Amino acid sequence: MKTISEVNEYIQDGAKRHGSKNKFLSSKEYADMYPIIEKIYNAEKIKEDSTAYAAMKEVGAAYGDRVTYTLFGMFFTTDTLTGTLVCRNGLPMVKLDSKFNGKRFTQWHKGWKKI
Image (cartoon, rainbow, N blue to C red):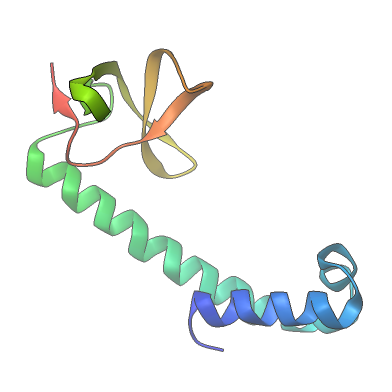
């Protein structure tokens, strides 16, 4: 195992063999493999984090900035979201001023513009 997709395949295969995902995750087999899986997961997370931070630098965004994003829907409808750029679980997220689709937080991307 070297990639996160291989880890996911391994977990799915183990879940089939053990009858459920929870049974597999509590098995000795998974416990023995966990240090390897954790290393792969952490390496993937660092890669994702660095990509997100590079994108933030590219557009001049920083935590605490007020941001806005306009969604264009079918039939020429638009929704404008506003919020504050925050760090949540080590990733840049936008804390929305009001819930959108039942969510208070959403992932930040380059489409968000500083207000």
